Length: 285
Image (cartoon, rainbow, N blue to C red; front, side):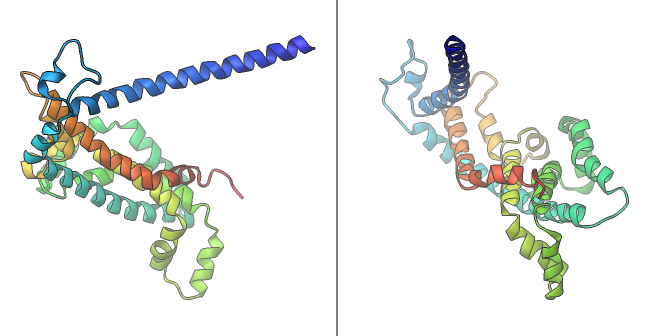
């Protein structure tokens, strides 16, 4: 009996060790390129191409950051922030309306319509297949190369996910709350935007985070829909350092490193609500 217990304990410890090693390798594979990029961004051009590579014995310099911000990078940074904020506002507004309607109202084909809008159409039709139709449609409307072009597209692309996340939060709010507010004289608009926007904060935060990531990291749509240098997002600014005759590794890594900062800030403030927002509605009372 003792040997079986020892074997069981040993096998359990071995499994834990293997999992620890596997997760450690995953962390290393994902963290090392980021750290290497940060290191390269503060190295001089001569140190970047030195052989053997210098890991620590180099003189730190911020010349690449100064160069990119003097070259208009800050404007693209502000453009991306504006596109993300506008997409989040529109996405949460429409997502909350749709989520509340799907959860609170009864109408014919409600469930099939919900799964069709949220899952079937977005998953069956890839985003790449919609690029040319969207380009032609936006061109016919005269919406190309405008400040509102990308927020409209980002909202449309991320709205199904926002509806699904917010609906899971609305489901956790009892219908009696709506009925009590109606008896007290509250309008439907106040119930949706005054009450649900407060009671569903974790779900709204999770949806806002997904919209932000989708808008901030997007590249293909912006490269096709936007031509004006004054309207380019930060991802296009990073791409310009991938030259035809070679890469400018110093400015490239500096621009990419600076682009990580907003994501870190957003995750810092909204990360705590992410899990609760995604798991809302998973347990029925």
